[in-house]
Length: 105
Image (cartoon, rainbow, N blue to C red; front, top):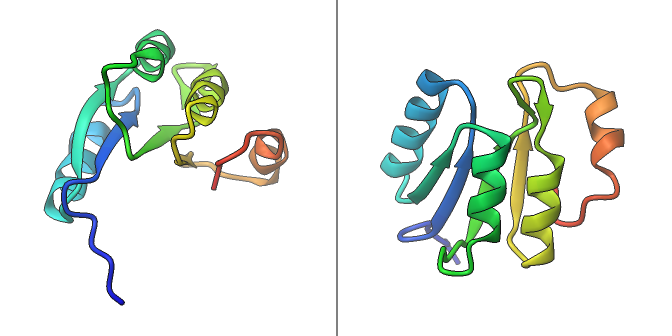
């Protein structure tokens, strides 16, 4: 069975505008629909808390201008939204910090 992402609705939380634009374009080319791009922790929290924003998943940058994205991850996990956390300097420290966050990959 070959699953395709066509129409899956994603939240993208990324503070670097150029990276966000490239990731959004790539996801769109793959068939995903990015329904919200949040560039700050506050906007990410607002999107995660919005009951009218239907989400099938989320991609979160761990570091948002010095703030950690973990509160957004927790809010998404509480609503059952699968998520993927990324950071350009990923290391074991981040993996250990994420261990208590359900749904994190």
